Image (cartoon, rainbow, N blue to C red; front, side, top):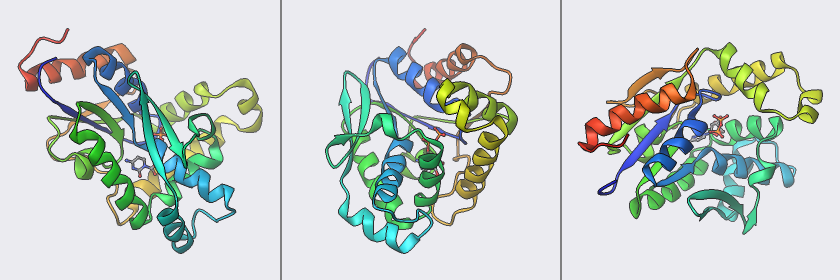
Length: 229
Ligand code: CDP
């Protein structure tokens, strides 16, 4: 692929963002950045410190002291919390809910957005999250909004859990957690989840991953004026 490009992918939990963004980045030979991992790392730190993730004041103070960054290794990312790779600790239901809670705090968002903008300055990226097309990369060459029915999103998330994890949580609890995050993410004051201006809206309900990636590549070919497939 010629030139520098930014691709923004937003949407609610379980819409297929990370799987699709990863495949897309691989096809284009560019970096994939999962911004949700940074909010998850912030939530993990709050939980470790015994801070209630809904306590906005304490979370705002905590974020001033923590060092969250993304390390890239052969285009694969690993989120770092004070230099510790916490990628394998941040996908639990407790951290998922916590990440949505800390993500309403303006100071948290300010810090994360700044870091994310810096990462996209020097290289081509596919970045996924909730506010990428609206706040982090409003000038992105390609903006995608992915969604799917809440039932399908819950089924997908449940399917990604290990057997041990499934012993602890039911499908209906996963759906309840997703609805909680959907509400939080769409209704917070600071940079809520919205379809960005100029974004291509794709409902992935009943669609295969390949179908969606193919569709996005068609759009990418159009905006870049290059053959990618
Ligand atoms: O992968 P999934 O869609 O379940 O969530 P995620 O992308 O890992 O994000 C976890 C949480 O972080 C979301 O529920 C949002 O509350 C928050 N988030 C955000 O506010 N802004 C972003 N750019 C990315 C995530």
